[in-house]
Length: 604
Image (cartoon, rainbow, N blue to C red; front, top):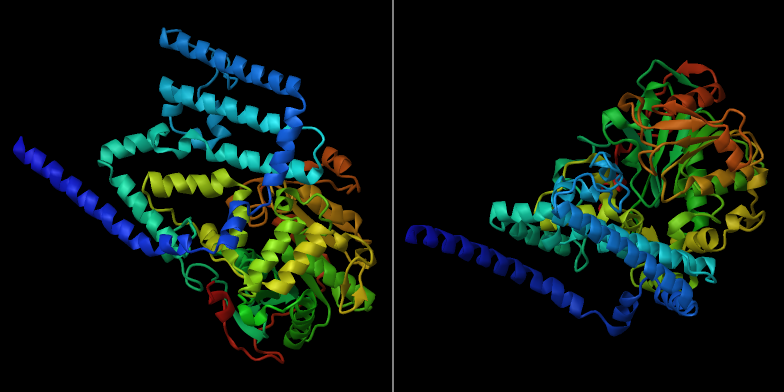
């Protein structure tokens, strides 16, 4: 017996020692945090400028006590129904209807399909955790609906109140707390608390990686290496300047379409989202379809590039790349793809080229790219004058916005999937994140030059000037998207939280040429990176292509699997006849280095 106690005490001593070591390692990190200047700390207290919106909301609620009383009565009634249901179940009654709409005889796991936070069987089968779960769902739904029902707020204030209320509701989920998560409790008991020790170690690692901020590890980054098991499609860097390297991919067919295909990814991420692994690489797939593919790899800028503007990204990014493609292939006519903010820049460039009577681009595809930002979704929560002023002041210190800041904003749009699930896995369960190429790419964030980023946020998101004829000028030339008359393929995704399809569709009525709008399943990334071999999701197409979204949706037909084939059927006839395949370096441009190139390898 004494031997067992000795063993237990030894294990406890080891655990205590590990805690102390971790806390010592964190001392420097927390010291940095406490040394934050007062003015910066004030900004940290309300970084999203939301306090004022909530104050207005509270005032509106207080001005209508009858409405608030009715909402409280409904909340009280639902909790009473839950108590009654729980009591009857405790007395042995079965198949009792519960407040999350489970009808008599219904399957127990219905809610799991919609909410992965409560996927464990205990949330259904254990009466205590079933009660906790349902009580939370009742209260969170009540909170969100009550705040959303406030009348008299401006669109901006209502958007902030709704978004941040949902963030609060997500944060308070019982799945996020040790004592109310049955999976965590079981793991703690079975491992003797070792999960919590590992979790604290993971927390320490992520705090140090974020230099005082929490940078949650979403994947095992050591499992991937550029050019080895991601970004592996064979290619060469054939051109570079201050802001980009241009990759020309090696052909995999004997003949190729005459017109090259030039792709502009977003500069807020690394290009290889389109070239992850061989079985999900859009680039490799396009090369195999007989396209001479060029992809821009944007630089990960430092303070020396802080003054780079939209004009610079037009001139050095779009126009110099077009010149380089012509030098590499001898072809002046090309087709383009623009993805996300890279698509926004591409659209602006097309309008500029139309104003200059530059007709080199014959067709263009947009992946999840917005031109009209009037309905740009939840990201607009982060865009107002006060927040932009704070952001500009913050960027003046470094000359750029660190990629982690933008990643945080994107992750907040899907907090349960991209924040809290990892919080539970890494820190409460003490597990290591899984190996996932997409999340490796997501963690490989890039910086944004101050001048360019502020211009983009103010002119596009805040003022929506790109959608207004003459609202923007590039190189001193007023531009108008309505002057763009080339064929357009407009891709959007049904569950895209970054570029909502309602917003993307608006571009259909801004261009003057024929536009083929397509709605893919899934979201901002999986809606694009959906190879035919995966046989996942679906897409919708309306061959009539009406210009009203409601009419387009009403007449749209669902097709199983990937939309890539539809895109290829559209682009191939616009790409010219077949010619002999082109080898990188065989034209007027020499090979600089192998893809993926040094710009892509530069970490933030």
